[in-house]
Every structure is written in structure tokens, then in C-alpha cells.
Length: 334
Image 1 (cartoon, rainbow, N blue to C red):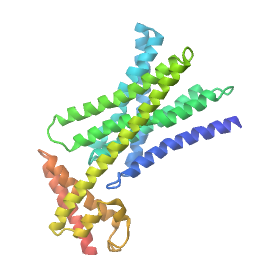
Image 2 (image 1 turned 180 degrees about the horizontal axis):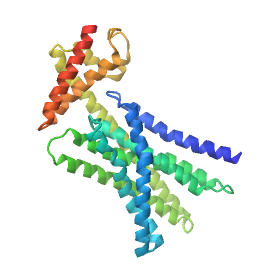
Image 3 (image 1 turned 90 degrees about the horizontal axis):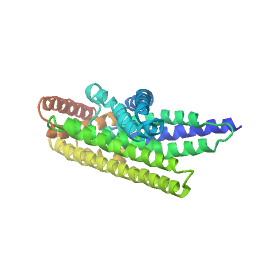
Image 4 (image 1 turned 120 degrees about the vertical axis):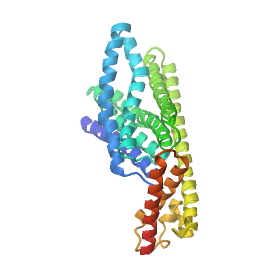
């Protein structure tokens, strides 16, 4: 019976992490990313991210142990090495997303893919920790671990990678080669700092747990407040990014409406998620989802053209003509 309860708790904890992913994916109301790409990003974090990080962390820990001793090496690996390695390895998926997949249209996309790789990493790492602390004689530590890693540690991975993802998403359509250094480095530093701070505080709490329970509880409380604060900040950044997308879509669709590409009333509806969910504003003969996506991407390409330089301008102009034609074709059907 105890084993069934434990298995149920582990399954529920894993399901909650996946629910985080689905919620974050759902938040992108304007041009939702293909879920199969988000899922592959999640799997990269869970399989590639944890596999490579585990190897590098373990090897580095062994090397450090030879020089500073096992206890110090474990602390350094947890607080310094792991955040540096794990945030870098999780972010490797962006090489594919930028160079091959061409999936990043804005910082919201970067946030979603960053969160996906972070949650994938957390999901698999959590299972390892559940296994490592399992003791059939005493399940208290296991259930505390399940709660802590589901409610807080998973969010730390999610937020850290999302910060870096937002920075990469912002750099994707900026001007100047320096953007590929400035923004990713800034995002990486923030990701590592957030991750290292959580690991450091939890290490302190564990280290003083037996000698000073009051200090241990105070440290854990501060750690929890840190995650809550970071979560609120991440939510506000997400809302700000979505609001920026809303303004971009409305601005450029109104310009397209003036050109006669689509009706003005559509330009007033498409930027609003609730409005476009209603029926009656679009002919039943027009596939709403495809039409809205084409119009949204048309607006995004205009925005990206404003910020672009070099050869990318030609590509954006090509995309604008393509999406504009798609929108006009849908209007002919109506």
C-alpha cells in the first residue's frame, strides 16, 4: 500500500510539472508555438540536458574532490558548477530553434521554449532525486523532497531557462552582430544567478538543519520567498511581452487594413484573444485558425523588418508578401 501511495505521489508530481508546461504554452494567445516543437524542447531538457549535465557535473566534482576534498567539492559542484553547466546545456536547444527550426518570432517564444527545456530537465532530475532518497522504512524525507522539488525546484529550472530564452528571443530579430553577445550573455548570467542562489540557500538550510533548526527554517523560508518573487517577476515579464505583441499586431494590421488587405474590423479583433474567439466576425468558409495565424505572422514580420539589418530584410520582405497573399486569399474565399 505504501508503495502505491509513493508511486501515486511521484506520478502526480510529474503530472504537475507537465501541467506547468501546458499552462505556459497556452499563455501565448497570439501565435501559439507548434506543440510538437515545444515537446521536443521539453524532451531535450529531460534527456539531453540531464544526461550531459550529469556527466559534466560528476566529472568536475571528482576533479575538485582531488584538490579541495569531497565535502567542499560537493558544495562547489552544487552551488557553482551545476548552475553554470546546466543552464548552458539546457540552452543548447536554441541552436536548433534559431538556426534550423526558425521558431523564434519574439521574446515570448523564447520564454516558452526556455521554460520547456527547463521543465523537462526538472522532470527527469526530480525522478532521480526521488529514487535517491527513497527509504521503505521512512518515507517522510521522500514526500518532503517530492513537495519541494515539484513546488519550487522545478520552477527554478523553468524560470532560469525562460530568462535566457527571452534574451535569445529578443536578440533573434535585433540589429547588429553584438546582439548575439550582449543579450544571450545577460540572459545566461541571470539564469545562472537565479539557479545558483536557490542551490546555495537550500545547501545552507540542509547544512545547518541538525545544528540550528531555526536558521535552517529561516533559510528555507527565504528560498521559498525567492522562488515566489521570481515566479511573480516571470509572470509580469510574460504579461509585458504579450502586451507588446498585442500592440505590434494591432498597429501593423491596421496599416494592412488601410492597404485593403483585410477589413479594418478584423484588425480590431485579431489582436484580442477574447474577441477573436467569438463567432460571427468571420465567414464560416474561412478557416479561422489559419487566417488568424497568417495575419499575426504578417504583423510580426513587419515588426521584425523594422528592427532588422542586412540580408534578413530581404527575407522579411519575402515573408510579408507571402503572408499578405495568404490573408488576401482567405478574404477571397469569404
